[in-house]
Image 1: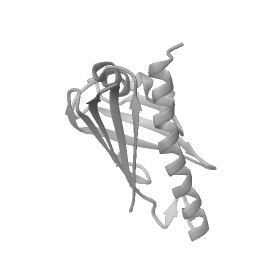
Image 2: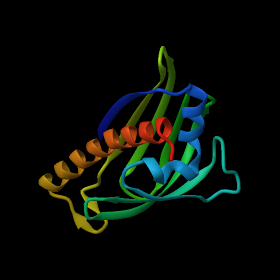
Image 3: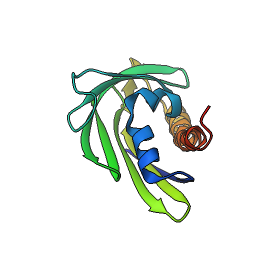
Length: 151
């Protein structure tokens, strides 16, 4: 398993940052490597809501179904993969700061030895790990830019 944790401060009220981040329509706009994020349940909000997420990382493309397993208004969001590879568990935390909101994005994931029918060698695994770390930082900087400088 690999654990990544990144934080950023956004100069905007917590309520605005939280609302933008948890709106599923915004997810492909700011989460790096996510190509689609569509509801698979009638409910579009709350614990138990599920989404089909398309992802493209390096030359790997895959789809996963994720479920919201915890949601605390204005405080946190926790989603976990139900199907597809790699397994992932993602958490978002939001807290007031003197100049806005601190957002922390934590992701835990595990690549299987066989990924999409290909055997993953150590060099490929390290390359994917590095790209996912880069994507986590990019996700937060993109989120910050979209909230602080909306078009």
